Image (cartoon, rainbow, N blue to C red; front, side):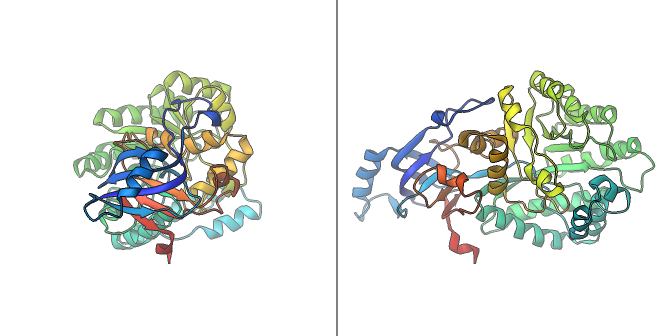
Length: 423
C-alpha cells in the first residue's frame, strides 16, 4: 500500500504530552494548525506542520511521488480515534420492557428481583446461536465506528456458563476477523457478572468460573482481561477479592464493576491492584482515596446514569483528587442502550464541568491506557493511524454540539472511511 498524504486540517489536536492523571486545562492541548499527516499502512509516519505539508502538497501532482494525496475538505478538526473502554455490545434481545418499568417508577434492583434485568438477557443470549451474535454485534460495532469509535472493549457476561461464555467470546473474535469497517474489539471475560440460577451460591459459581471457564478462555486465547460485578445481587467484596487475585495469577488483567449502587467494589479494586474500577456513582472521598493509593483508573459510565435516571459519577472530584479519569459508554441492553460515546461524554462533561481537554482525554489517550494499548490514543509518529475528523472551524465545536456533529472522515488502521458508508 502506498503512503498517504492527508490534509490540510484546520486543527490537528494530537492529545499528546498530557498528564496521565488529574485535571487538564485546555491550554495544555497540543494543536497543529493547517498541517497534515503522512501515513504508511496502519501507521502515522509523520505529523506535518503547515509549511511541511505545503511543500509535500506541491509534489503531489507529480507522477513519481511515492504517496497518494487525499485532500480534506475545508474546515476540518482532527482527533485520535475514540476508544470505548467499557461495553456490553454482545447480546441478544431487548430490554425495552425493563426501561418502561423504570419509567413507571420501579427501581433497577426491583426489576432484577422480579425476573427482569441481566438474567432476562442471559436467557435470550443463551438461545442465540454464535452466528446470530456475530451478526448483531457486527451491526453495533459498525455503528460505533461511524460515530468515531475506532477501538472498543466488549464484555461477555450474558452466558454465565462455560458453553455460552465461550460462544460470546468466539463471536467477538469472529467480528474482529471480518472484512469491512469495524472497530478493533478488545474482549473481556465477564463470566462473573451475576450468579446464575443453576448455582446455589455465589461462591460455588465463582469456583466454577475459576476452575472451568477461565482456563478455557486462556487456552483458546479468547480474552486477556476479566471483570467482576461487585454489588448487591451480584458478588460480595470478599469473594470478589479472592477471585481477582486468582484470576491475576492465571495471567489476566483485572477490572471491577464498582460502587454503582453501594460502595465496596472500589476498595476491592484497590486491594487487588485492578487496572480500573468502573461505574463509581456511589464513591465517596474514602473510596477515591483508596483508588489513588492503589493506582486504580476511574472509569465513569454516563450511559448507565442516563438510562437509569440517576446522578452521574463525580468525575470533577475524581480529576481534582488526581485520578486518571476515563469515560466509557457502558453500551448494554438494559441500563445503557444509547451507546453513543461522544454524546455521553459531552453530556457528562457539561454536567460535571469538565474541560474540553479532560473530556476528550477520557475517550482517547487515557482510555487507551486503561486497555493497555500503547499504540493509539494520540496523533504521533509511529502510532496507529486511528483518526476521526469533524467538519467544523475549531475544536470547541465538537463537544458544543453534544454528539449531533458527526465525523466527516474516519481513518481506521490507515483506511479512510467516509460518512457516506453509513448508507
